[in-house]
Image 1 (cartoon, one colour):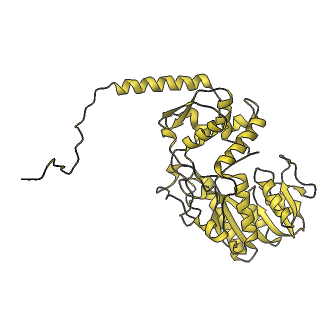
Image 2 (tube, one colour; image 1 turned 90 degrees about the vertical axis):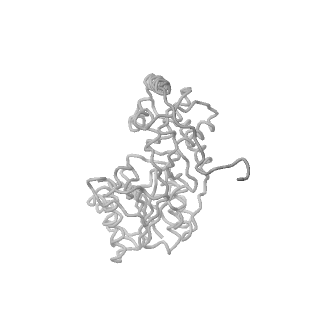
Length: 358
C-alpha cells in the first residue's frame, strides 16, 4: 500500500508518518523543501508547491496512491489534483470554518458551546475571507467524494501545539519565565476557554480516520479532550518550570502586551462527541504531559531573540513597556476605586421571619 502526505514536515507530520509505516504503508511526503526534517530513510521526499495545481501535477506525474492525506497547502487545490490518483483522501481543515471562531465579531450569532460539526459555517467572505475559503475547500473535498473521485474524510483541527511547531505561542510565556519576569498580563481575567490540539493527539485522530472505513464521507472536530482557560494555560506552564508570578488582569482592550500568547477572550470549545463515538477517539497524551514536552522542547530549542519566530509571534518582549502598562493600569484602578459610590444593602427577596407569625 502506498500513502502520500501533502506536507508532512510540520509538528504533526512525523507522528502520522510513523503511524503509516507501522501499518505497512510505503510513505512519500510532498512539500516545498523549505523545512526538511529527519524521517526514516525509506520515506520518499517529493518537492513541489501544494498551493498550486500545476506544481502538484508536475511533481506527481502519473503516480497513484492508495491513500493521500492533505495536511498543508490549499486543500481545494490538493483535492482537485488527487482526482484519479487515489482511492482514499483525508483532508486536514480547521475550526476557522465556524463563524466567530477566530473573531467573535465575524459571526452573526454567538458560537454554541461546545461547537458541533453541524454548526452553520461561514458563508460571508466579507465578514471572514479566510474562514469562507476554508469552507470552500471542505466543499471541494466532499463534492469530489460525492462524485466518486475518492472516499474522503475531513478533520477540523484547532490551534496545534507541541514540539517543532512554527511560531509556537507558548514561547511567549516560556521566554518571559526564562527572563525572570515576575508579572504577566492577561485579558479579562484569562477566563476564556480555548480548544487546542497536541501534535500526537492530532496524529492519532488522523490514523483513526485511516483505519476506520466508517469515517468515509464524514467531517470530524478534533482536539484535546481537556480544555484549559488562558489563565490555566499560563499557570500550568509556570508550574512546570518551577516559576511563580503575579497575574495582572486587564480588560482585553487594554491588555495589548498579552495578544501574542492570549489570543481572543471568547470561549472556543469543540464538541468531540462524534469522533469519540464513531471512531473511538481518546487523547493519547494528557494536556499537562503535552505541555511538559512542549516546554522542554522550547527550552532546548530556544528561538533567536528578535529573530524570525519572535517576529512571527509579533511579540516585542518589551518589558519596560509592559511594566509601564501595569503601573498605569493599577494606578487608574486605585483612582476609580476611590470614587465615592454607595448602594442599598442587599435584602433577600423573600421574607425570613425570626419566629412564627402570630
